[in-house]
Length: 194
Image (cartoon, rainbow, N blue to C red; front, side, top):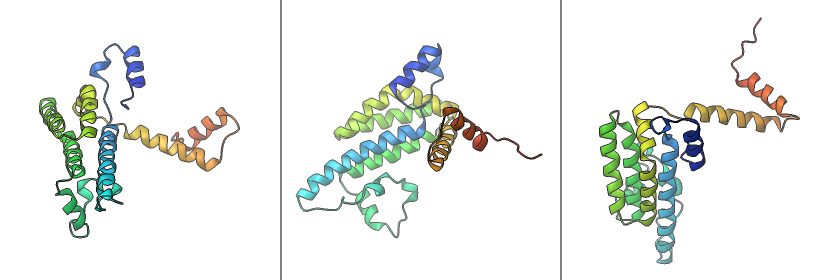
């Protein structure tokens, strides 16, 4: 699930043993890391631009991309940025380390890896990342549950995306019943052959 306090509270109210069953989706955790990284980039870019250094201008999407998608030959300039002493480069390294923390299967190794990552974030002296650290500490139990159970929210997100596309393509429905019928017809897996 999403890490929204409203969702967590509602689930805990309905399920008595929810602390061992709630799993926070990897996409939402990665999104939190990406938002913190972007805040660091924006702050540092403003300071650097005032000093006449425009290296971070227009690089938002480059920093949010995964390390696996960086081509070493064509993006050599970005590799140089990631190896620099910029706070944005350190925040990007933290984001990449967080993505590797999801690869563990054992709860013990996963807890140890996330603990090391949180320690690194706490020592990094970047205020936006420190705020992220407290957020991750509060939600670590659900992250570890997701790693243990190996579950993800992506199938539900995919269905929701297809429903939103159907709604946009139709330009609206006269009633809620017509909308529900269209969703069942297009996404219900109905066998319409005689």
